[in-house]
Amino acid sequence: MLKTFWATVKQGKIELLESTKIPEGSRVLVTLLSDDEAEFWLQASQAPLGTVWDKEEDDVYAQLLKI
Image (cartoon, rainbow, N blue to C red; front, side):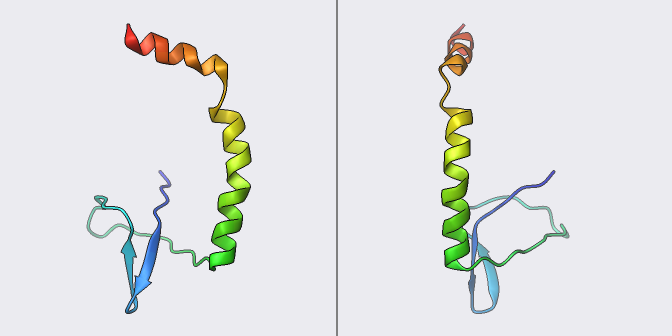
């Protein structure tokens, strides 16, 4: 399964911004983004995700979970 985590580099070491459990010895892929690129991808993803997440049809699931 592919998971994405935000991180920063401090003194040559990658530090995750959130606490998470990653098994020892896990292989990771690191992609460097400039601040401009990171902002671009954040803005580019907001509109499509808004159309997926903000649907009235999905309110039925919240009602079913209350049962």
